[in-house]
Amino acid sequence: MARIHRHRENKAPPARRATVRIDDIGAGGDGVASVDGRRVFTPLTAPGDLAEIDLSGDRGTLVALLEKGEGRIDAPCRHYGDCGGCALQHVSPDYYRAWKRRRVIEALAREGFSDVPVGDTIETPAASRRRAVFAVEKRGGDIQLGFNARRSARIARVDGCLILRDELSSRLAALRALAAKIDARAFDLAVTCCDNGLDIAISGKIEEPRGAALSDLMAAARAANAVRLSMNGGVLALFAPPVIHLGGVPVTPPPGGFLQASREGEVALIAQVAAAARGAKKIADLFSGCGTFALPLARTATVFAVDGDRASIDALAKAAAGAQAAGLAVNPVATEVRDLFERPIMAKALNGFDAVVFDPPRAGAAEQALQIAGSGVKTVIGVSCNPATFARDAAILASGGYKLTQATPVDQFVYSPHVEIVGVFKRK
Image (cartoon, rainbow, N blue to C red):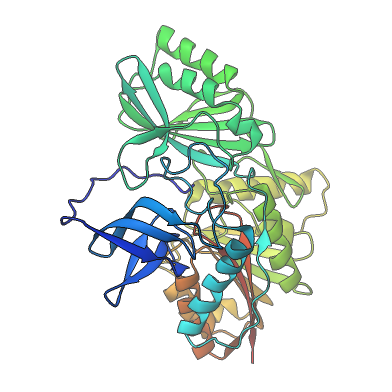
């Protein structure tokens, strides 16, 4: 359930009716069939399905399911098919797990890594997502709060969600009541489950409420179990500092700051990174955010954490200093605010580290990978939510003399086509 973006619906060429057999699932989560020698992608279909579709270009729309394939199950969510948040609830668990692993294998093979050991997909529970961005639209007295309908700008209202943590899913009615107090026709409501309540951030063309309107909004936020309420980056109310724990260290993330999608996925990623970095005494954590890896790694090593978001770095530095002041076994964490796309850490500066961890956004980090490739660091650990850009960056590292020794898929984006990867590189 990645953030739903409002977009204009594209005008497609006239459709024609066709009957197809679904062969596979594509990278976007849609079923793939062959029509007249070309690949056609149809959402909500599974391997083995015989489907009647309306075909327009390379896109199909399911009209009728004529035969159920061996890869199909009944989707468990009543909103599935309308809500665009999930793509793969209808695919059998065995196929789903193998498909996510295969996404990693195929992406690596395209860049020449056909012999790299790829572990089994590490699973996370369905009801584990701790953050979501809801689209909100008011139509008269009706409030639509949910996610965009499939391939549409229309909002599909959700009254429950199988992939959200219960602390979040059970409060959708309270969040809708909060949305009613906001004086705007359309806006986004980002909600994160922290360890002590919900961190709620509102964004859109909204004037900051005052007087009675602000009081009503505060009351609605309290009823939704909010610990912090922000609007367009500014804090409206702080009932208590929102807290998450990373490596046992309490952290207050900034409004809208990046966190892993689920605690369970975060734990799995940390375990993989920590195992790969075992024995390192000096570690650079690039694209560190507010400390997902830096703080757990600081239990056994000194860490240099770098990120382009000042608020996240400030949160990390404050958490590390607080942990040391409280007597927790945390080594020093040095920090730097730096745009690693424009100003990557140079190879020479990396030479003093035993290990480097880099966890860039989906676009990857080609320029930073180039500098790592030119360094003498013995162990490099790459984390990514995009197999294609991970494989591209891995090829850059390989060109500098690194060997990708293992890759592990982590499925923290349940029912989506996304898969997280942890790769371990060793200098030859």
